[in-house]
Length: 60
Image 1: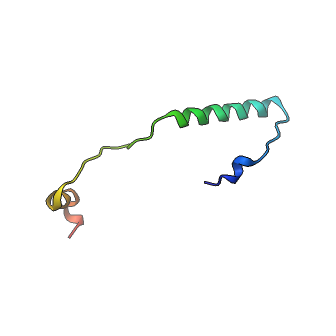
Image 2: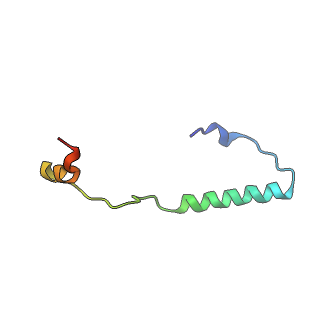
Image 3: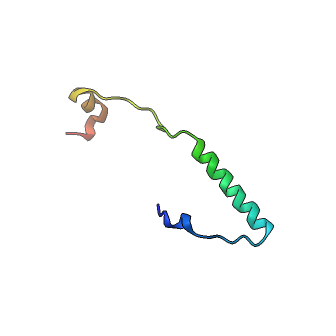
């Protein structure tokens, strides 16, 4: 992600643009506040036999 775009000046000329900008900042703050974690189930595989059983026929 480019960081140069953060340094740009913006010009807000009307109330609708100001409201859209504030809304975008608020949505970004909400997204940043959510914890990031695995989105699915996690299973730790220990040893060659568990790995082979997990992948089944896909591994030779």
